[in-house]
Amino acid sequence: MPPPDRRPLERADVRIVEERGPSMLLGDGVLVTGQVERVTDFETGFPWQHARADGGWEPDPWIGDDPGVVCHVKGRGLVVVSSCSRAGVINVLRNAARVTGVPKVHGFVGGLHLSGGLFEPIILRTVEALAGIAPDVAVAGHCTGWRATHAIARRLPGAYGQTSVGTTVRFG
Picture 1 (cartoon, rainbow, N blue to C red):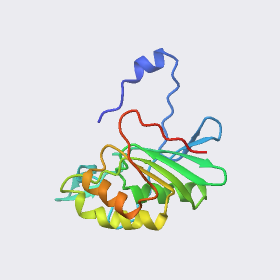
Picture 2 (cartoon, one colour):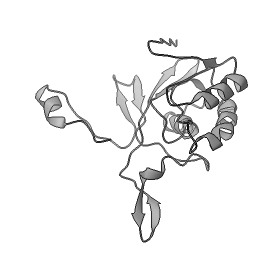
Picture 3 (cartoon, helix red, strand yellow):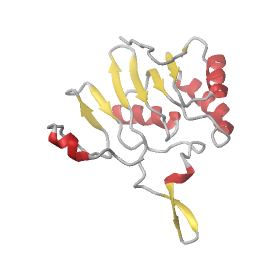
Picture 4 (tube, helix red, strand yellow):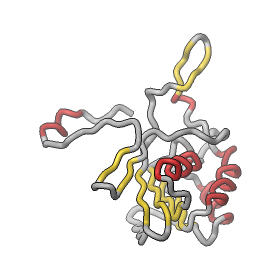
């Protein structure tokens, strides 16, 4: 989707910072992930995040992922909040651990983008990899899809949390 029009934001004295890498908000309290490093062989993102070149398709580095935010909850680990996890939730979580140097993921809140025929084939691999990361809390969002939601609830019953509009999740 196209970015918002900068002019009204700038007229309202909103400072716009463009950054492809990780950056901090609120002092050092919140990390914005920036581009997510792809490390899994099964989370390849959207096919339209590719450009046609020489008769084939190649990844297009100018089509960015949706960034997430990360907080380190003292004594518990990382809490990662992602909108749709288009880079793949496992890539998102591993990237957060790599960027912060904190291996423990305490919680994940966000979409896993596992609905529909394009993504449902990777549900089982994603859920098994998520179980290996072992978050204490896993709250699957809007684009996870019912099949993936049920798989997460079955595989991680102690961590799974149902969400809907207005849900509040507290960590700390």
